[in-house]
Image (spheres, rainbow, N blue to C red):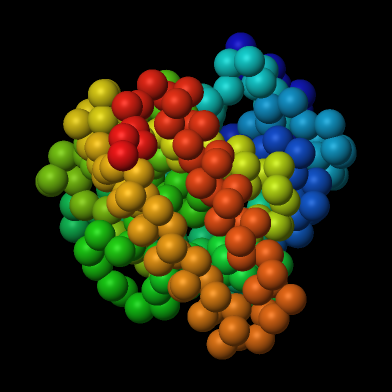
Length: 307
């Protein structure tokens, strides 16, 4: 059940909008105010609404959201999944286009919205776009390394550029017709992109960039790595898909070699970028990855880690 607390929009007098910006949130007080300030500073020649779909925040997130002209909705944590929240946002939205933005993703400039949505308005078969995610420098060197690799500054194409719903725009009609998987423990955007018909094009728009990082919180990353472990058997059973990282039926030796490769990459990145204090953190970070990932695999029912 979704409950609405307020309903203010940056819209025409007849209450129609061109774009609905949907923000999923839970305990996002740290960056949400900054994100909303940048949204309402956008130089966009049209009308948009901002929808904050919250799932049990207790850190002041809702109080921050209500300081802005946004529509705030509540979703029970018990019914939350990443895919279900995206679909609920589409059901609430009034705009022809839906922009999905994580509550801690801050647009880097005032043209972000225009650049992200513009490719959808042409007759070119593009039904979705996604923008670059730039790390907040120094907040998390390990994630910084990954984001710089995954989201290049040019219009690269291919498997290295991963569609992400943290910073994307989709035609509302397409989301309604092809909803996100509501049962997946994560990677709902990856699944959605893989299942989209080939005639529906998705475009990477690096100029529509946001700042996006997560702090080095052991609790957060343990949960993140565990969900990644749960995801692999789910993808294999539900879709016959593999995910990034070790293959779904890889032996333990393969996984350990892959982890050692990651450790070496993290060491070189921290050394070359003078994150010297973080060098000592690498064994703990990678140990947490292995342990949490393994727990996720077991919870997901995978037959992994055979010798």
